[in-house]
Length: 425
Ligand code: SF4
Image 1 (cartoon, rainbow, N blue to C red):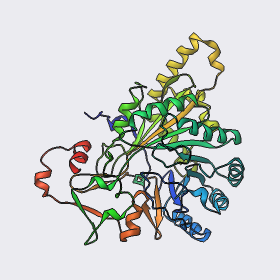
Image 2 (image 1 turned 90 degrees about the vertical axis):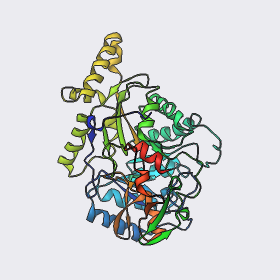
Image 3 (image 1 turned 180 degrees about the vertical axis):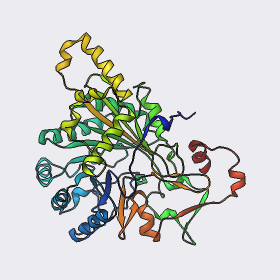
Image 4 (image 1 turned 90 degrees about the horizontal axis):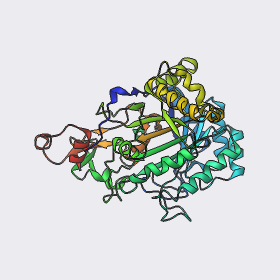
């Protein structure tokens, strides 16, 4: 039974195609590692030139207001001009966020990136990466590596520090362990992201078409190797497993799917606490206020708050009159201070947890994307979903999935996303 979450209780993030918190800039398709679940074919010669990158930035500027630019790839740190790229973005008044496996990062490079204007890092660390010296390590053991990166960032200072992990059927149970680790380091770890594994291989009941031409989806990197892996994990499943350790865990905001209003493609949670205790979770009004006030002041939605703001969560408790989540958090916090008055002098931290449920293929062949996709990139001077760019590269357009069986017999039962996704397999 899938955990039911009521989307009406949460704030629907205001992000959309021309006005979004984040955009996704792929500076290279070269990578120094192989990760299962990667959406991009590794091309060691795939660095974009500075001219091409400037052009992509100009396309973003023309079509989309944005606060942060996720530098992605491949691994952006293997690009020989990464410092200059970061500088270019920062000079444009945007926040450069580096999405990396961290392998190429060292303190010297980190200092240079900070000088160039880098705002934050999102480290991809999970157990299905073929990471030298960490092969065969569990998600729990990998927390040591996560800590290594978080401490490196904290030492240089001023960076937003995020970790993302792809979640597979056999690693879903470790999500609470990563969350518990995140709580122990809530002072230096600001964001945890869990991305449900997806592969087009689930759709063996479909033919794929690019325009009028039937195509072989096996040619795309996200379809060929993963028939054995569960690829229908929902955000709801991730919340369910988190609640086995944190029963009060409560999201506050979401992006729905383009085909399903009540699906959670991006599900955001903000928790407030210390290394030893989580006092509560921010509510939808808090998130609405954060997004709308940032847009009012800066004409763009908010991506990645400064670490100095996240460590001043005590101030956020003043929003108790307008937000029920903060009210509950303040109540729990004050009770705790009543028991231990010295705790009043310890800082409170805000930590964000994002769950991402990428493309879902429904039994009628529709592909449910993130409505208001933040990871939109540039392809041939247009905005395009980064998670499906291989289709553009291989077939010249996004493909359509066409069910092999007649729809009447397939559509008799089931309208929940879980039923639709399961029946599409
Ligand atoms: S639609 Fe694709 S690229 Fe956009 S946020 Fe969702 S998974 Fe990422």
